[in-house]
Image 1 (cartoon, rainbow, N blue to C red):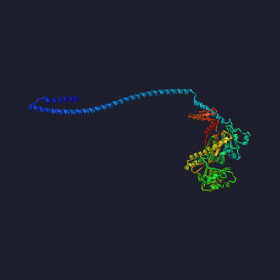
Image 2: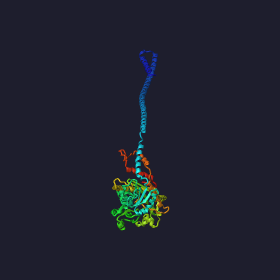
Image 3: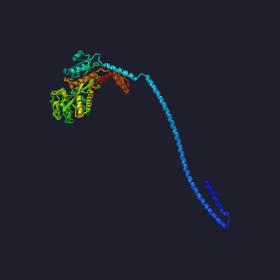
Image 4: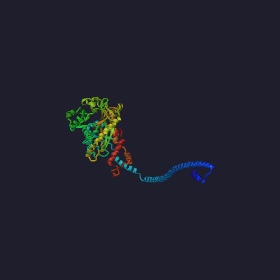
Length: 574
C-alpha cells in the first residue's frame, strides 16, 4: 500500500471505534454479548492498525534513507557530468591548438624551402669563393716554387772542406750526386771566393767547423740565392757538435726540468763544474761510475772510466794536456747482445732548425765492442769492452762488418729474444727529437746575432747521433757528430757500405728532388679553410679575420717541407 492509502485506512478505523461506545444504548445480554464481541473485534482492528502504523513508519524511514542515498548519487553524477563537459571543452581547445600549430609548421616549412631555394639561386649566380681562394693560393705557392728552383741547366755541386775529410768521404758523395746527373767538382774556398764555380747549386761542405770554416763564411750565408743549399747548419759547433757545447746546451735547456731529462746523461764540464760534480757524486750519484772525455779528441781517443768521487778529484793527473774534460754518469746496466756492449749510430737529417724540421734514417748502424762486457770491471775494463767506436775496436783485429750490424739485423734479434723493436725505435725517435728541440733556442739566439730574422733557410746538415740503450730498453743520446764518417770499406756485399750508400741516395732525393707540389699544398690549405682556419698572405695584406698571416719565408718553408715529404724514402719525418 502507498502511504496515502495507509493513512486513509487508519483514519476510517479510528472513526468507527470512537463512535461505538457512547452512541449505542444499553441492551440485553445478547446485546452485551454482541458488544463484547464487537469490542474484541475493535481491539483486534486497533492492534492491526498499530502494526500497520509501525510498518508504515519503518517503510517511511527506509524510503528516507534511500532518498538521501539517491540524492548524493545524483549530486556525484552531476559533478561527474560537469567534469566530463569541462574535459571535452579542454580537449576541443587542445585539438584546436594542435590544428593551428600544424598549420603554422606547414607554413614555416614552405617559407624555409622558399628561402633555401632563393639562397641556392644566389649562390649559383655568385662566382665560387673557394675556387678564387684556391687560384690565389696556388699563385702564391707557384711563385715560391719558382724562387726555390735553380736556373735551367744549373746542376753544379761543389765539394769543399778540410783535406782529411775530403779524402775520407769524397767518393761516396761524388757517386751519389753523379748518379742523378749532377756535375760534381772538388774545389777550395779560395777558388770560390775568386769567382771560380761560384754559380753552384749545392755546396757539400766536408769540414769540422761552421764559423770561419774551410767552406763558407757565416756572412756569405746571407748573400746566397734562395735555391742554393749548403750542408752546414750555422751554430751547430756552438750548440751540439762539440762534447762541451752539447753538455752546456742540454744543461741550460733542461735546468729546472730534472725529472724530464732521461733522454740524455747528466754532464759536467771540468774544471768549471768541479765543485758541483763532487757534491753530486757524493749524494745523488753516490756509488755511480763516471766516464770522462777530452773535448779536443774524437773516435774514442782519451776516454776513461772512474769508479767513484775520490778518483774524480785527481782527474787532472789523467789529462795533463787537456784544459777541458766532459764528465757524464756511466751507464751501469747497458743492454747486451751476445754479451757485448753496443750503441746505435742514427743518421739524422736536419733541413730546417728554426722552425725545426728533422728526418731520421731508419737503417742506421749498430756498433759493437769487440770484447765481452764485464759490469764488475774496475775503470770499465778494457777499452774494447766499454767503448763501441769502430775506429777503436777494429784495431782488435775484428772486421768492420763483424763490428757493426744494420738495424734490420738488430730488429730480428730483438724479436727472436722477446723484445719489441718498434717500441725501441719510437723511444729513440723521441729521445733525438727532445734533444734537438732542447737546442732550438740556442740556435735561434745565434741566428739573431748573425742577422735579425735570419733562420738559416739555405742550410741543411746530416748528423750522426749516437744512442745507447739500457737493459730496460730506454735509449739515451750520448753525443752528436756533425760530420759522420761516410768512408766505405770497399768490401763486396758489405752491409756497412750498403747502409751508407742507401742513406746518401735517400738524402739527395729528399733535399734536392725537384717536385711540383704547389697544387697539392694549395689543396691542403683549402682543407684548413674548410675547417674554419683562414689564411692570409703578407704580400696581399692580411686582414684581422685571418687566423694566420703567411710571410714569403713561411710560404717557401711550406713548399720545401711538402717537397721533402714527397721525396721521403728510408727516412721518416719528426
